[in-house]
Length: 166
Image (tube, rainbow, N blue to C red):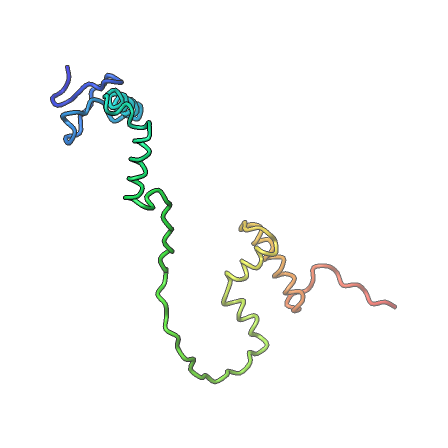
């Protein structure tokens, strides 16, 4: 027994709740295959009417289409794409303010730069190794640190010193 207000779909036979705006003529549910069947049936009924059987044939049809195209110029043409909206507003140009030059950086400037920007060092190491894995970057960092300490004589090299030639 069907519930109040429900109808049985003419295609799949299941009960459905019709759209309130189409109560008087909706006979199919909203499933894609049922909607396809509904469209096919509507077209079949339309073509069975005598006045519609020659709608797409003959010189009258050509004239009708030409007249419609004249009334609707450019209807079938693709619309031009709008340029994308600007992400930022245009800024007004500002005159630069004169500033005094500071003294050139001392010998520790490069070390200070690296100490202040660890992300840059990590990025540089990842580019050198070709890997973004933390394990690879950590290993390379340890090797570079050891080599740098050896160069700066902060730590003795792990290999024995060769004896002087006699």
